[in-house]
Length: 251
Ligand code: PGA
Image (cartoon, rainbow, N blue to C red; front, side, top):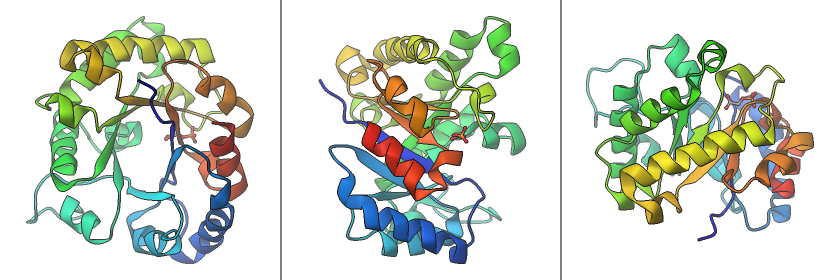
């Protein structure tokens, strides 16, 4: 079954509401160029409502960068799935390596967040990826397998089919070092096998696996041409409408 390419922009902690206006206007103006590709932008919480409003007549979806698993309560600094749904947010990034590295995110909390997102009808983008030390120690497959199995534990195949996995080698994020298309394809194919082991081959064939880590207009086409690379999670290059749309159109 052909998987539809899915390109998502992760703005991280960039763009105030005022600064985002130009980028959103640029995306809106060029949205007509988007072909048969799913596209999302994931701004900071403060810009979610503005992004939904600015992009409402376009096919571009809006995503958050995190979500808490509880419905409400004493969780200072957190945002619930219902709060995101209220804003008409479509998707949510979960378990990004920066959350894991700087904010104590674990596979167990990734799993809880993923279940809460699915229960609310949000499309989860669950991030996995090895550090440079892990790759050099030959542990890449072990690391991404553990993250995937723990992150998606307890999902049924119908839920799993909705999830997008983002494979982001930590050493390639924001460094300008991209995994070669073959290196990325090898891990994506391995992950497809892990997913088949968890949910069966048919479901694994439906789950989109994005690549992330210094994906740019000049390397996107080659990466996206790999059989198991079904899209991209774009950081730096998603902050300029032109660059982001160039990646989308190369898909
Ligand atoms: P980058 O970030 O494209 O700037 O490397 C990707 C990500 O962290 O999602």
